[in-house]
Length: 503
Image 1 (cartoon, rainbow, N blue to C red):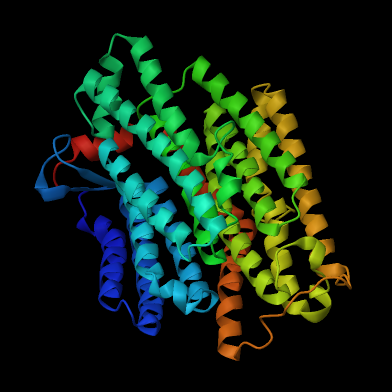
Image 2 (image 1 turned 120 degrees about the vertical axis):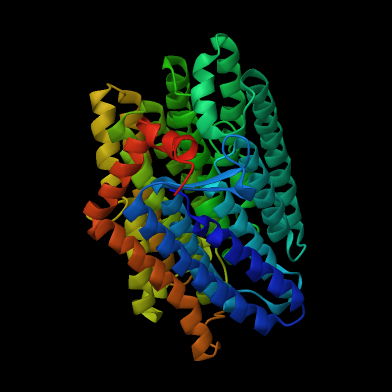
């Protein structure tokens, strides 16, 4: 079904950014515009999600050029779910940014660049053209590089160089893969590619092409052994920026893998084995890296890597149950990881540092805030019946069914190490007394009440969403079931793009 409203989430972010550019020096105006634009974007995302639930897959042909000749935008259940989650995270980060960033950073153009980044994310999720996906990836990379360097501190610039170098390398592999794919099929439309790729006789060339995509998306997703740039860079920018990065950017790579390796390159035994090996090592290296870090944001960064491996394992097994687990975990991970970095920023304000050895006593001084943070921490660990528990049920179930015992062992190790590092963080930051030698400053106490509310409110809102995902898991399972069905059998996607030319 054709529906021009597909582009609404992209245009809301684009126009918000452009209007903010006009108000370059007016940071107070930019804050209001950011929160207002994010709220409108959230309402538009809810409406688009409802439309897809009611009417099925929606399409929009740019400039009225029929597929596969023109650029097409497609809103299926996977796309609109990620657009909705991104909009929720965008709204929360906008609220946090309005008080969590210095005016100096806002004057560098933080808010318009942030909304250009969200626009790129929405575009990547909604495009049905493989080259257009690359274009939106570049919008994301450029915007995120600017956000990472805002302030110009040495650590930020060092992290940004590593981030940019690896993402440029990923883009090179991605673009090379697109060139090879176009050379052997003559098309860039993903639905059309799904049909044409089956007609190519040279299966070895298809396998090589798929490896280029795997490397490109693997770097962007921060999988083993291509992940080292993430822990070296995600701890350097402000917490609001890190929350956007930690919750959303690596998930674009996972989305691209789900889309491309279900629609175009259906994994054969070799690719599935390779993906499983990558998943196991990603879980283990991420978990072990988190064990030895004392800086909150550094070990959060390693947990991002660890939990990317959980989703990679679901893609590797490539069955309906496994993909349900991967998609459910993706939904959970976007919400909880965004919130974790907001929590890290709040702890920085409460204790003056993110070094756990210098923190302590937060539960005694701020019991209500501590209990709110506990909900987020328990969700991350996967304590039943919170959101992190349910996807693991599907992943364990399918791993045992397919006799993937190394993956089962990695899941158990990764889960227990996550539990250990989070429990250790709770003891160090919330329960123990502040060390006498620690010289910390409480930046939260002198804030005006409205600033305190705006700093805690987004964490509370995200925690409520996380609670909803866990306590209303049946509804999320239904969504994951629809998504996994469409990924396993993409015929509905192909028919919507190529078969239905009119409303």
